[in-house]
Length: 444
Image (cartoon, rainbow, N blue to C red; front, top):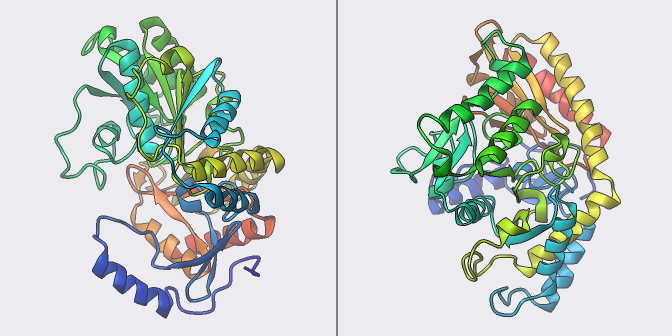
């Protein structure tokens, strides 16, 4: 690609994308959603070029997958080198060095003392395995999650997820022994309590649950996203996470931190939980770990990770060597280019621009997030905070026509999420924020 910023040369979607869209509709079931109707031809850094030659600034990053940028040179080189040697032998048959090497790297980098790492394929698979490990370690069956959470689309992870439509609608019955505790969404704190007190009140509902509907002996684990993703990019307050840690410690419950979306430098630290001063028992990560290749990990305290019997975890494709090689290159790039610092700087710029828009447009209710993982919530009225779902499509459509890809989030579907590749240039970020500003102005 020779472009350095957005460049629109046809209608969007263009004729080649429309032809592919017709083929897609005929061949692919409607359950596979798509946020745009453009079809990719090339991608590099923070840009995507479609089959019609239009170039877009990408604020979705494959839904938080491309933190190191599309087709980072080091990642492509690692993929090519590994695939030239061997692509698959199965870790369960003939083990290989890349699996061991990525486990060693994650053990050293994760905020967990004396860690071991299990490598699997997807975020949902990592969550499923973390829960299995917690159950085996504790001998208990109950799982506690937070309102607004998203943990995946498999039966168990769908059961742990809050958003019914589209993720759970018509797919029941769900897995048993799953329970919810309140989410400390500070924007929707209507209790009159200060934010920290409100956060602690929400956390203490967990303690109350353990002495009313449940007993501690029934609960294997609690799983929390430090920044809720699909739930609306809601950061968990520090006092909330710390109190949950205390409750887990007091009751022999495993604390699982779900960093599928927030991990790998997205929030300004390799893992968001590093900003909380809390050590998880288990941590799940995926998405940006291998820059687009399917790979996920469960990292945890060795004594917990060793609980399953031989053969109790794993899978045929788990820890594919090409994906492991890509992940090693990703972690190398995080260090080489100081992507944590880039996430913080990019997040500061975006937050400042989004707050300017909040000051200008009453439909903007809240700006929030950590690092370069940000959410912009839209409301009909700032007093009632009634969700403004309808404006989202207007804004994202306008932006797409002007060369910027934004996608939505939120249990109420009224949030635009910002997941820019961390290599995004200042020119690209400014262009995108100017387009967003104009999009809101045109949509109100």
